[in-house]
Amino acid sequence: MKKDIINSFGNVARIYEETSYLFKDFSAIISGKNFKNITGNSIGTTSVSKALDASGYWLTRYAALFFKPIDQEANDPLLSVTVGFYNDELEAVEPYLALGVVKGMDHVRKSWQYWWLYSPFINEGNNFEYFSETSGDEQKTNAPSMNEEIIRFKCTFDDSSYTWPKEGWFFAVPLLDVRDAKDVERLSRKIIELWTAKVVG
Image 1 (cartoon, rainbow, N blue to C red):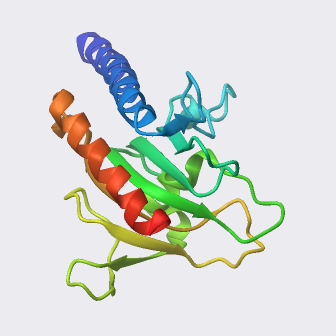
Image 2 (image 1 turned 135 degrees about the vertical axis):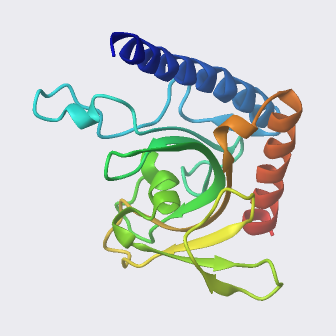
């Protein structure tokens, strides 16, 4: 039992360490393509706690980086690279990498939030609808999977719920399937192409 606990914490620490290396690789590539990292040398995450009665929040559920074009003043829309480890019920899931373009609500007080891609991927609170564009026509679909299919999401809240993402497009892969620099380069290229198609148009 003691050895299992030691191994478990060792594995979590290694996944976090490898994720930091992965983020640095994505940041270097995307920042070299006329984007800037607005999270700097840190991850975006939320609901991390030191409270004794909130032990489920002692660990990071997800970690995110956000980017915007160098010449874009507003922090909306944004490009995001997000890694998830737990769902909103605090259950461990297969670690995933979600990459996408997110837009905020049309509200004067809106500001970007770290959970802008995490919430749509896990369909937090069942507050999102999904649409597939695979067939050429947009079709309503189920929650996203990790097969790199590009999915459009739309929040079911109105613009008064200004901390939620309004809409966006993303795709996801299992985190452990990203094995080397070629994978990072390919996925970076795909997310920048998604930005060009959906934002630049």
